[in-house]
Image (cartoon, rainbow, N blue to C red):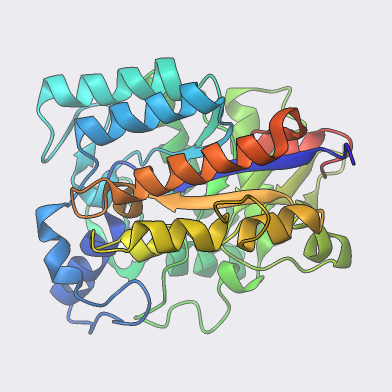
Length: 346
């Protein structure tokens, strides 16, 4: 059987460990951070608050070695700790320059670079730089749900402008799967499928301010597929169509395959084998590939770094090596934008 196996790597949160910063800031605003799934022992991640230079270099090596394509987040104002076009707390000027050089020269040629809106922690006032008492996911959901399109555009525009300032051409938007401790979204979060149309409208209008010929864009909201075809194949699904026919797609991916490595204490062999068995015949990813699903695989800063052990990147490398060994030329890597535009994928 020679059917292609389409694959993409979706990386969220660079250059910060959002698991740590998001909960630290919630705590600072008087909320009680959720401990489930990503949250247990979050304070133990204080020693690994961001992507180290060795993590950035290692990920770029991985991308180049295996011909990886997909989507890579770069936060314009990571955790509200500065601006990547100026300075960011925790990075020296030389480190920030190296990080941006690597993203621009080694990652961006193969992966769509998206903002995960501005901070991927608490929302931020673009004019003052002050953090707001709302999660960014909830804030974006609120703006979209209440029809505040101009404010939503300004929020996205600020992200796009900063990325353009550092020589990147962003595409699409990552919203992030944060909860709503303040309740501002009133139970209607974009990650649950609400308000994707106004969000798509705002995104497309901002993208066209920077590149007027944009016909296709995408968003990653963390929401599940809605349409039958998307559910069956994990394919992108159109969630906004402009009057001139331009479209914005929602893209879908597998939950982070390296979550088990978050604290750097995983049984790597066991976890890798569960994804792709040593004989290449079984495992969760093999089952998906054989079912014709797109292997859109999520990773995060904090799982790649794995509390400064690099376990997550080791897992990703070995899983990718096994997939390549199993499928050979049938394994076809696609950027997220390519998944939305190329025949046979969308």
